[in-house]
Image (cartoon, rainbow, N blue to C red; front, side, top):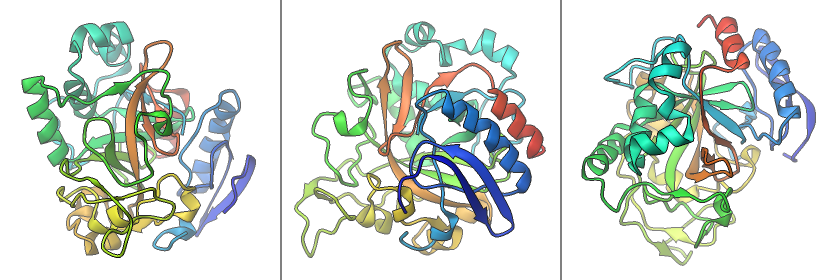
Length: 333
């Protein structure tokens, strides 16, 4: 349960992985072959102050990130839940046709402040988030969040998502930050990291899902009628409005400021029991995950970062990384 730096040997049933972590609790992968990928990823971590999502799968179902978003070349079959109107391009196509997704100057010129449209386009092309130089997370927006962002994008109104300045690289440095489950689909989003999804883009079985949060939710003192996760500053009155989003249980117990090994991981059966009826159909019977809050911020080079409350984050970049290509080879993508 302690934060550990350096090489960590992990085992998950019949799988073992060895990689260098620079974050919190370790996470495991599916096969011995995958361990090779993480050995290479460790080199990338060692050369940068990167944070990466980790998992202790023994904590799933019990109480127990610095990256880059990549537009993946030669994408494998997208998730059945992603009904894209366009398909992901090759690296060559991305460099000529979709460079506005990752070049800051082109992004600003193309979107003119319409951040809702930017997020929709990243979802539409099946963008992947490259954690620590090789952990490829497929970005997926829930249907309700997509519908909300489509409305915002069309109207280009004051409810546009906010990209925080470079002086606020962590969620706990944003104005009025509190440890709670609160999200407004503007400054803070609800989301999850999901694992063991065979059709996820990036070839490693990882998805990062963003979902819709109740905009009418408000902070409340923690008491018998207003519960909150361990270490929370306030409770949050928001309801579970997104069928694919956080359940009431995820809201009332959220503690994303804590180390992942201390938190509640969920399997498909648990998600479905809590109301996400189609979880296994959408993501597969072996999928499991953990909820996080996310926000957007810039860096001193005007790149945009999608950052979780625990510090894991990513920025759009061209093509697939070396580790992304290796992951695709190892996982048959």
